[in-house]
Length: 107
Length: 123
Image (cartoon, each protein chain N blue to C red):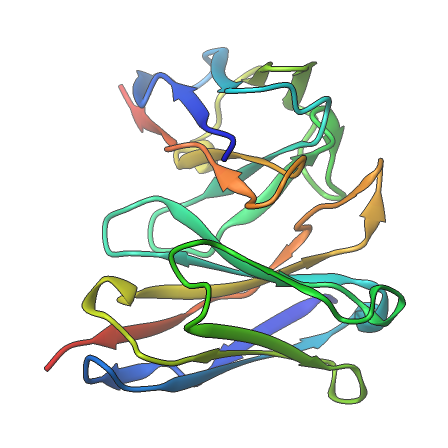
């Protein structure tokens, strides 16, 4: 199985900060990666697919990059509604696997 | 508006069975792969399995932790996907989400998510 490792597991940031979350795959997954946001007590929501393509309706402050084994989710200017847990998920090979999550908290 | 609405969760004893349903609307269901994903209390997301569409003969994939116990099926005429869970274990306690997506950039990603239904396995 492909292991997805996210870092950090949690971070504290202030409104307006630039935030970067990384995801590393245990083998090459090309760009078959998605980023998912889960606010506290809510259902997951897809933000980015194919490593860098923004889902419809997702604010442009979110961006994704990377290919192969190393990927990044960036929030250019953190907003109050962005405090959530973020997961990466690989779609290259079955079983599909998630990273352990990165919890973004208010500083 | 895209909607995925899960139902069928509840309390079941170890060794018991439960069938979850997910009703879809707002998109072309038949052209989408559909996944089940679960989240144990206080834990991260875990992929459970997937059903492909008619063009791929409705074939399925499963996580090792549920293979042989869980079965995913779909009814395109009802725009619904199902998760039949047998021989349930306490470690299957989780919120179960259905998710779905169309073919883009070389893969079927999970573009849409439901609100989830809670399954509790306990005696």
